Every structure is written in structure tokens, then in C-alpha cells.
Image 1 (cartoon, rainbow, N blue to C red):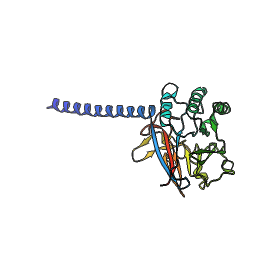
Image 2 (cartoon, rainbow, N blue to C red; image 1 turned 90 degrees about the horizontal axis):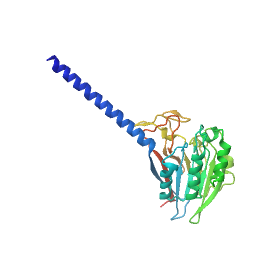
Image 3 (cartoon, rainbow, N blue to C red; image 1 turned 120 degrees about the horizontal axis):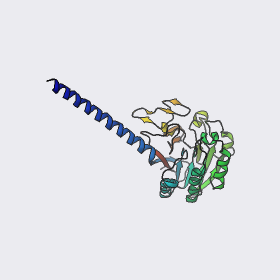
Image 4 (cartoon, one colour; image 1 turned 45 degrees about the vertical axis):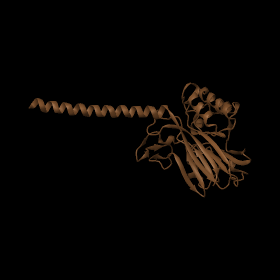
Amino acid sequence: MKRTKKTKRNLKRGIIFSVLLLAMLSLLIKVYFDTSTFKINREHFSSVKLEAGTELSVLQITDVHSRLFGEGNEQVLEKVRELDADIIVLTGDLIDRKTEDLEVAFELAEALVQINPETYFVTGNHEHENPDKEAFLAGLEKRGVRILSNEHTQFEKDGQLFNMAGVNDVSTNHEDISSAFSGLDTEKYTILLSHAPSVIQKYPDVAADIVLSGHTHGGQVRLPFIGALVAPDEGLLPELQKGVYPLGDARYLYIDSGLGTSALPIRFLNQSQISLITIQSEQ
């Protein structure tokens, strides 16, 4: 009788241990998958400002933090070639504040420009906090990346003019929104690149049709039904995490959760990603 009870207890313990072990293994596999592989996130927007039949594709890459996906980031570059976007935007933190070897970022930037010369960049907080910031920005310019430092430019697609404005990192107070929009005709469709999404909290009436940001990493670690536990600048249970946020008046904020990691080198329920954003005329 006693042996039978002891055998049953041991069996229950064995089952519990096996279930916990399986759960832990599944968790580790998921963390590895979300951190070490990336996906393509696709978003679509429309605007009455665009003439009928106009369509612009924007490939957004953000928060790489000098991370590699394959030798020379070939996995990323292969997808960039495949997606063949009209323009590429890099919304900050290509490097980490502690990055000493800038070559990984330089090689990625150079390869992106070779694929598409229409490659734009704005600074993130990690660029501003890296002691080699000036050398890094000079290296990007040398490789043909178009840096938008509190300024704007225009580009054309199918005869339609678009505005592209860019501000330096808002979270470290390096932005100058007035300079970025000075003389800009906002009757034309306007894209604003801002590493930190808090630009829309600081400047809620910013005259951009779409704001493309990063910085939050989507919280890096997310939980079901809760989402991000913590994000930079916002602390616990942040309001701005990732995805699309309507701003009213047909304006939108889009936060890409990025490719790399910071602080903790892990992601969970939040796979690394790049985004293909399609902007077209309103049907």
C-alpha cells in the first residue's frame, strides 16, 4: 500500500518536472527564434493628397544596434533586394552607445545604398550617446546615405512630389522641429522620420501625414493580453509600443519594433522585423 502511494507521488512529480522542463525548453526556443530571426511587417496607408494611381513603397529599418543576421547581414540584404522598395529609411540606432567597431554598420549602410541610392537616415539616442558619433555620421555620408538632420528634402515618384523631413533624436533633446519643417509645403504628402515616437507627444500638431519611428523595440519582451512590459522613456506598460497609432486629421504614427536589442539581448513574443510600408492614393 505504502509503495503504491509512493510510486504515484513519484509519478506525479515526474510528470510535473517533465511539463516544466518542456515549458522551459519551449520558452527558450521561442526567445531564440524571436531574437535571431526576423520577419517582414507590411502596413498600408492612403491619402487624398495623392493623385489617383500613385503608390509609394517605403522600407523601414530601425534599431539594428550593430546586430548581424548572417555574414555581412546578408539575410537582411537579400530581403531588401527582394522587396525592391522605392526608398529606404533608417530611423536611428544603427549602432549601440557602446559600439566601438563601426564597420558592421558601415557595411550594412554601404550595401543598402548600392541596392537603393534613395536611403535616408535620422539619428537615434545611441548615436548621440556614442563617443564616435561624428566619425559615424561622416562615415554614413561618405557611403552615400542621406542624413536628415533637422531638415527636409523632396523626392518624386511617378510625377508625384513627396516631402521627407527628419529630426535628430527627440529623446535626447537634439531635435529642431521648426528647422525640419521650415519652408516645407505640407499640401504635399509629408513623411517625418523621428527615431523616438515621443515626437508626437512633444509636438502633437506636427504637420506630417505619417511619422515613422522606432526606439521602443516593441518592448522587446511582450506578454499575451498585456503587450510590452516596459519601453524607453515611458517606463512600465507604455502607451506607445509598436504598430499604427492614428493621430487624427488623416495623420498616423507608425512604430517599427526593429531588428536589434538593447540592455537585455533577448526578444519574446516580439520577433525582430523590418517593415514595408505602402502609401497610395485614396480609392
